[in-house]
Image 1 (cartoon, protein in one colour):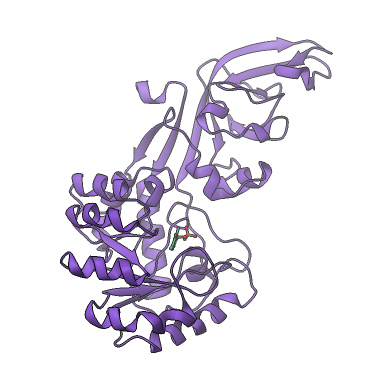
Image 2 (tube, rainbow, N blue to C red; image 1 turned 90 degrees about the vertical axis):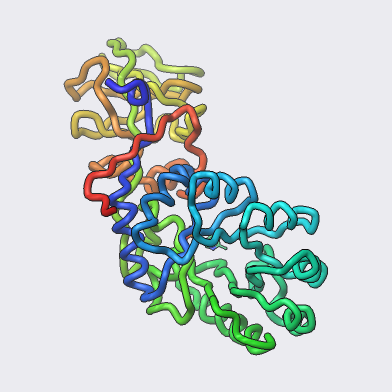
Length: 360
Ligand SMILES: *Cc1c(COP(=O)(O)O)cnc(C)c1O
């Protein structure tokens, strides 16, 4: 047994990741700008980027300078675009690290130009109201943009997974904003995963998928679904009989009806297994579904394994797809988003990379 597979771990299928990325590119008929921010949604930005390299993405998207630095140090040489607003006093670090900033204010663009210019992307807000220049105020930037033209310009959809027509409306605003620029930037981009999965081929120059690559689809109405990428496994680290009427875990919220066999899994909320799954989560053990019994604790979670032959050291799947509840189902049960669940998987869980079927 590997030390990394002793208690609980996250298994990441890099072959499935590659195939999901290829499926996005094919559906969008556009090059990829994979979003590997937040350590590739918790999966590990460096191994994820390395696995995506053979697909020759245009570049990668990150959220912070440190995330970019980490990838540069690992030898990733493609463009790395930072998709959050930066302080003017951070632009020196961005340049020194060879990263591409998103800019949207006159003073920042002017500062970038004065300090030497170079590639930057214009962030255009078409309704997300989070970052970027408003689509109807882009005209105010035309002077500085004329002096220091961006390599790219982009917007971000707020509700691509809803069938509410909002991406079309946002795209119309994006077009209006682009018409106000002195010239067309080389690289226009807009689509996130749900936009690619639910719409026709991209109208733009590349697409920015994140969660789809990591195995989470956009639900009913999607025209393409990803293969599962993430499995979270935990071993049975203790096993006991509990008699009729006895209770399990803190606050005694689970009371045995009849004699039960309770297996303790070596994973808890300090690993990112949501406490909200107390008495409602499930896992797969020996191919059978077992239910969480009692409150999830910091380091351990109990399941009712009465009907399942099992022994100390056996491995349960608590998130996954064989046929454990997948990321989306677990997130739903915990009343959180799949993004939150994935990025919440903590460092105490080792990452185990599977490379069967990976193309070099
Ligand atoms: C995170 C992010 C994406 C990717 O979104 P997914 O829903 O994970 O595909 C795309 N664009 C921007 C600007 C983002 O911040």
